[in-house]
Image 1 (cartoon, rainbow, N blue to C red):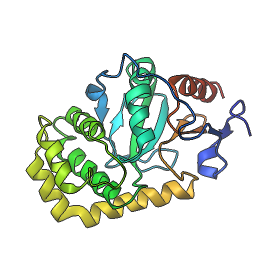
Image 2 (cartoon, helix red, strand yellow; image 1 turned 180 degrees about the vertical axis):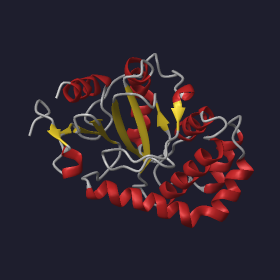
Image 3 (cartoon, rainbow, N blue to C red; image 1 turned 90 degrees about the vertical axis):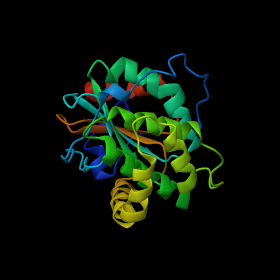
Image 4 (tube, rainbow, N blue to C red; image 1 turned 90 degrees about the horizontal axis):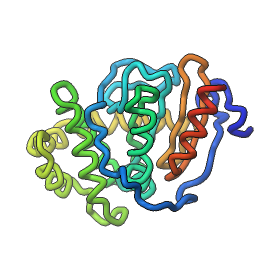
Length: 241
């Protein structure tokens, strides 16, 4: 099946359309790389008609946006870092800020124990800031990616995450430590549940994206650090599908 004929509820049915592969595209850093996404973050307790529980997941963009992009990511994933540095700013400028698309950020700890630690920390921070100042979550999220090192080298250990957190205004590193100490088992259970749901729907690595129209229930999938042009193609295909 080609992306020229996106499938209705393709993602839920397990018959997804895949465009590209991790690392298939190499391009220069965008001048928009410092673009500020933080003012657009919000939370939701709903379940998307795609079947994804939105509770506990940062959402970038307007709650009223007609299209959704589900983004599975791992803080240790180098292609996720590339996507966020080189593509996400332009995607946000063209589609998120005008209110056409919202992006649901879902942790998929793919590379091991430190990936899970970072994913749990992300939930702790989101829970800490989402009601009063959700914008600070993206500051923290960006700070972690800015410190990305070699996979499983220890850069994403709890101790290092505390250090990165101390550099982010508005996020309490001591509260993060308490959350990791007290809530890690329950938050790991949530993350594991999300990962099982993702795998059952054909998501096997990071970054993976599903572009979804809740009205027509049409979906298509992209995999890897794709350039913004691939997202434009996907959005147009789904919107017109």
